[in-house]
Image (cartoon, rainbow, N blue to C red; front, side):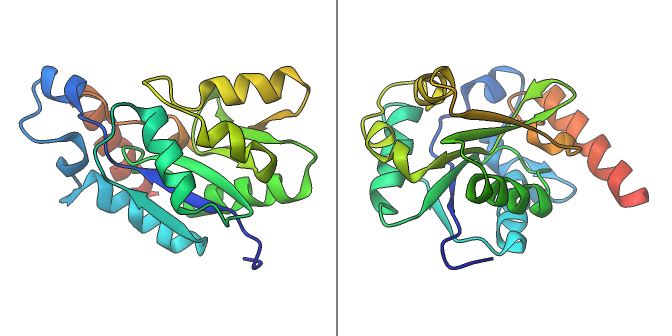
Length: 187
């Protein structure tokens, strides 16, 4: 990857309440998927992408606060790919592709879509810095995405990676991820 590659921000500071409410006995990022914690799968994909990255694990009042803190920590980055830690099946090639799209397009924000579903990581160009730093609360970066997309500076990127929409919020989602992981191993 070029020296001006965006930094991946891995969000791992949420409470995971929906997962526990669905019957999970541990935090969703520590739940086992194919014998390894969910977060380890996500980190493996991030490392394999070759892109710079930052893991945001400190407790914050909401996802917006977590993103703002991570962007502050990586404020010298050329751009950011915001990736929740509970997407263990995202492919390294998809992360690289989103970085390239941001570098070669005129978009300020870009998001992957699988089968018409918006997924992660969402890519934010350097021009979004002030907006990302101002985030707070539970909404995450959705307001920033809407603002830039509303100005015609957003780009949906079709991908063939179901991992961009396979987040682990419930025990059922973990079971679906396990099935997809096994299918990938067999294929």
